Image (cartoon, rainbow, N blue to C red; front, side, top):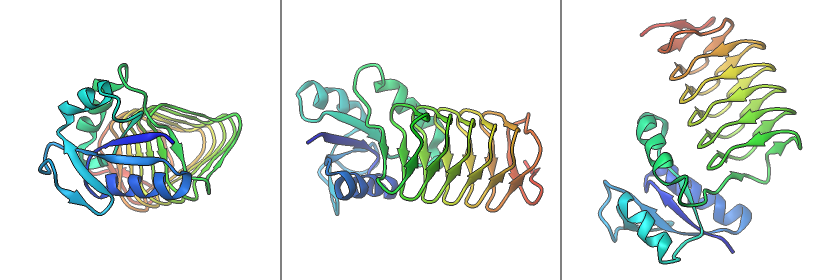
Amino acid sequence: MKRIAIIGAGVLGQQIAHYIRTDQGFEPIGFFDDHVPVGTKLQLGQVLGIVNDVGRFYDDDLFDQLIIGIGYSHSDYRWKCFRQFHLKIPFLTFAHSSCFIDSTAKIGDGSFLMPGSVVDNEVIIGKNVFIQIGCSISHHSTLGDNSFLAPGVKIAGFVDIGKSCFLGIGTVCIDSISVCANTRSGAGAVVTKPIPESGLYVGIPAKRVK
């Protein structure tokens, strides 16, 4: 049984602990967090240390793989943590058993797919990507490193989503468009044209508001 350490003791980290334990029988050994006191006992584990303690725990053979449980509102820090440990510690790549993952799809290290998501043929998902419940990524699309999909996002075929994007709940991207890095979309946005400039896009069709 693989022993999994989680960076981030908040709601997302707790969700990760729940699904890796109940769906595939991994053992979440606990959490590392800079903002929750060490020793704090949570419903699904204990805070074992701060983020800088991760390497020491791994060197002492206290866990086998690592996963990032930090949400989209701290995207830069999420990526920083991944880069800090990626070359030193194996990362868990997890897809809930209710997901459909085509055999031709590729999913990068440290990515996490919540229940009910669909990843079609020839899709490429980068490293440290988080995909929430019920998302759909159609054929020949690419999702960049460190991106985060909220529940119910629908991405059509031949779409290229850049690095560190956040697509809000229910966002729809039509086929054959590109979305540049560090783009965010609001709830229910419908992206009908390429997005060459990062910012927040909302509405139908999606337009940049800041």
